[in-house]
Image (tube, rainbow, N blue to C red; front, side):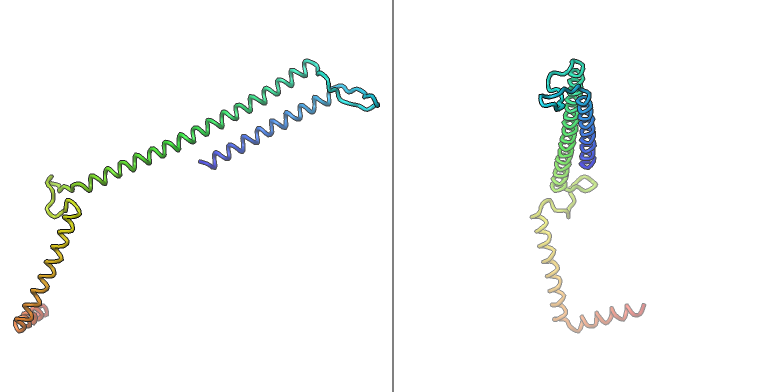
Length: 174
């Protein structure tokens, strides 16, 4: 977008430079057409006095065209700048609205997660404290089961060995 804008600016500046060169060429052409007079020392000098009315009108017309083109260029440039700023504003507004929507979605997801039946699912925590409590209970259950298994093996070693051997034989028997 910015590259297109700069390209348009350069193109417009080039056109203005061409118009300026044409204007200068016309002015030079008009100066050469003016009658010359001899100076006090016999030198040719161009008339610096008043020009004939037709030439003055032509010069004024060219000056006005140049000013009009310059004003058009400034107006177009201002319009492009306004459109560019409007587009940037709209993009920022869209981004802000998107962020608001995402924040709203995050808040809704964080509040309550409902099961398909409509009620709150039993194992889904409502907040971080409940999640911490679930994790605490789960780790303690694992720890207690492990200690219980080690206690049973230590106290009833022969029965545990027989049970393990029975399971291995049954597994290989199949």
